[in-house]
Length: 169
Image (cartoon, rainbow, N blue to C red; front, top):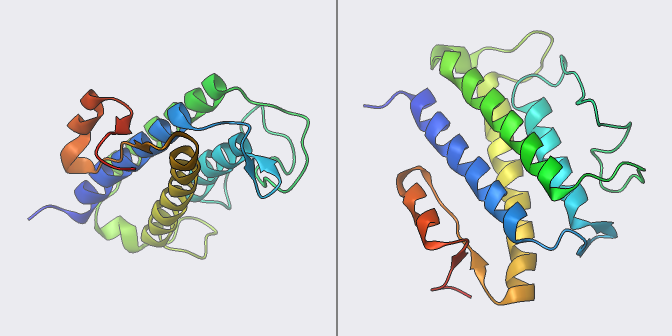
């Protein structure tokens, strides 16, 4: 039987792959509740960077400005898709390195000064990343009539067929 942490690692990687695909296919300027879609991409990555580990002990990335993680807040900083993809990859690597040292037992412990267990933090980010990836993919599907490829841990090879699932609309 697989350890829970091994399952979490595999599916976490797939979650990041799906977000990357969404970034490669979305319209960054599309309106999402009054904000450009790229702000929701940043919001999603930033949340994973902060909440996957321990929101009580977190250092903002150097390009962050106060409130930028909330798409409803105006900000002067504009990140390109290349910068967003670079940030996503840094967070993915940070997350995978973190998961490499966790055990099933550690999942049930609270990180320092945190009200949530590690498992709660991880599951919340699974939900959050999947929600926003689906939101972005919905806009892409509406605009293009094509559905971005969506993978799980056991079918990452689907990406070899391109960025879109030609069998769905």
